[in-house]
Image 1 (tube, rainbow, N blue to C red):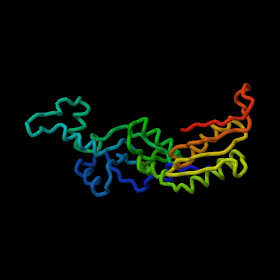
Image 2 (cartoon, rainbow, N blue to C red):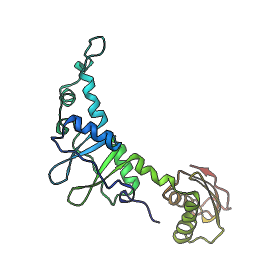
Image 3 (cartoon, one colour):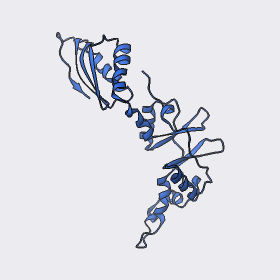
Image 4 (cartoon, helix red, strand yellow):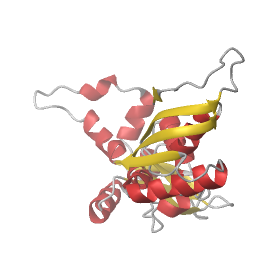
Length: 231
């Protein structure tokens, strides 16, 4: 099975800033390029951090509200310093969390979830920025057509990996949701089949009503029986 990688979905033309890029120039870059964050890089093109719209908006927190109150007084020293910063070096969140071009889409998604970020600069083997990948980019895998998902499951999963005969398992795919019906040679193949199908790019969920010819998981079962589950 072929899985899409970060290299397949990332944006290659990356808008960047330097540590001395002024606040207003960063805001202009966001507006002009219709983006919400940019990497801050050093002279070798390596990421030092990220500046986002949220980092710029922090400056509003130190301004008085219409009643003359200063809500920014509750900021700690670090956040206040960032709110008062005038250049990318002071505004950025650092260090930058990065990805590699060869990462799978799930690997990048896990990194975003772990670090609570919305995008990752993509770096090459010497740490230079070669792209950027966002949550929206990763979601491209779910734009895959149902027919392509069904064909891959039939050919790669059921045929090439599990060596099942055509017709042993029927596959239906609707809006990325896979439904499997039929009989497998052994009961132990059911969770394996389910996980292999779930790993196919574009699959949202897998449901099955599969039974088996031989129960190889429990010596107490003498007769084949249906195993029905949904996930």
